[in-house]
Amino acid sequence: MDQITRGYSVPDHVPADLVVDVDMYDIPGGREDAQGAWRDLQTRGPLSWSPRNGGHWIATTGDAVFELLRDAKHFSSEYVAIPKIEGKIRMAPIEMDPPDHAAYRKTIMPLFTSDAVDALGEQARALCVELIEEFRASGRCEFIQDFAFKFPLGIFLKMMGLPDEDRMYLRDLVERFVTSPDLDVKIAMEAELHAYIDRALDQRVANPRDDATTMILNATFEGRPYSRDEMKGTIILLLFAGLDTVAGFLSFITLHLAQRPDHAAYIRTQIGDETAMHNVAQELLRRFAIANLGRIMGADYEYHGTQLKKGDMVLLPTSIFNMDPERIDNPDAVDFQRATTKHVTFGSGPHTCAGALLARKEIRIFLEEWLARIPEFRLDPDHPPEARALPLNQVMTLPLRWDV
Image (cartoon, rainbow, N blue to C red; front, side, top):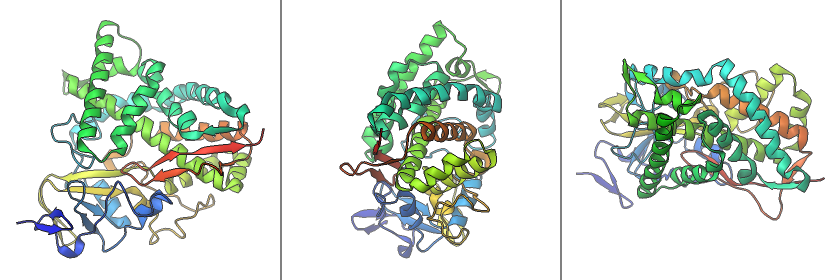
């Protein structure tokens, strides 16, 4: 019989001293410092159990996060979201395990070669400038609504060959899916997204184009055509990865620079220096990680003396590795002169993010164009920003001002 802890059921195989009452949709301190809040979950280590959101383990040391990210044999990616949605369409390749993972990943990699990213980068730069110019002369913007969502979603729509006027509709669907802990809301949003993608695929069947939607429509796995569910799962992955993660990076980076004008000034002086800008991007990515990744146990397994059972969900917060004081000095600080900026912001092992090169390109373009066009900017004193530690960390609102 399961234990009962504060009204939540705890499986018998979970030791009572490993139970922590932590809600991943409301991490203590997450509104002040989302990444720091996750890092502060380092408690008894290497694993703790939260009875909330269906119950799940949390890797609570940097070593555990790193090891479990790379251990696809025991920690399956069949479900990467908590709570898990039974019977959902799996997102390929992120929710596929080796060896199938490699075959599905191969389908989307032509979108993320160096040449493809460079070509898309030209369109991204033009879009970046266009969006900034819409509000530059006003001396203010609400960064999330006016830029952070529009920029990566616009790039996704260009890649997929989808109508630009669908931007806000898709943004609202994804935002409600990501931020809601309500499983019924998630299921409803996913169903609506499936219907949208079905319509797009039907249009490509009738009128093929030179775009990613047509490429996925024609994809094969082990010599057979993709099923419709495989097509939808792949497109959903590209949407979620391209929109929420990049929007999150840009928002946290901009929030930081608004609070640290000296850092913004430093970056302005380094634009054009490839090494310096690489170090800048790496350090910002380390400090402001977005994803907290789920895994599911495919079989019973003992990890450092802790027994995990088949079907257990495990949460891997990337900030616990990125901000581990055991491996990095003063991890809360943004230091562009660090000798090393190793991070797992894009994951590690076989499931390292396929779109990492494009994400870095978008961040680099944003820094170059934003800092070239917007003078010293600051938070709006009348409307403070709101951020939250979530399965995908997010800045909810970010009003900015500058002198014109």
